[in-house]
Amino acid sequence: MHTLHTKNARGFSLIELLIVVAIIGIIAAIAIPNYLRSRYAANAASAIASLRVVCSSESLFFNANGQYADLSTLGSAGFVTDSDLTAGQKSGYQFALTLPSTPATTFTVVATPVYSPANLRHFFVDPTGVIRFTVGASPTNTSQAVN
Image 1 (tube, rainbow, N blue to C red):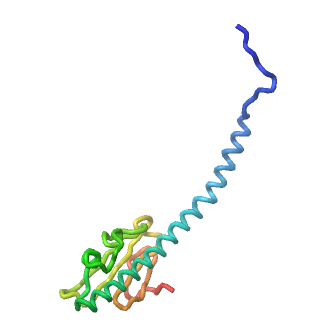
Image 2: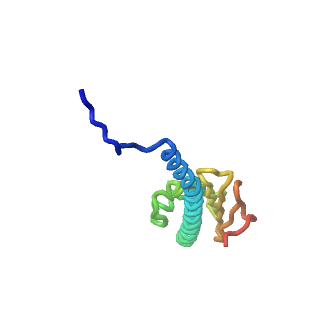
Image 3: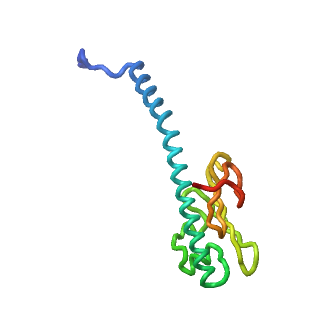
């Protein structure tokens, strides 16, 4: 049996492959943290917008019914149309609406990040409409306000 070998047929050397792998690793090391920061910032912006929706919906519901309502009631009454929000989780945040009295004359909503809760902003809103935050802990009505 005769095999034909061409003189110029040649694959990549180990060094060339290692250089390509190193370049891909460097690009990934730069791109992935930037992507995650962008994603966390987008999730936080979505949480703030969702808290504004809940606060304005609560205000409208209170004007119509004389009391505040939970998320599922706001959804079924048509005040909040986002099914993810009425279910209590949206864009990487878990929303907990608390009605401390019956009839509900006040409310609080806390948005807690689902991923990396120790490193990300937690948000809070009450009937005043001022959205407040802390990093890594549950905020209260005395926490720093969002600008």
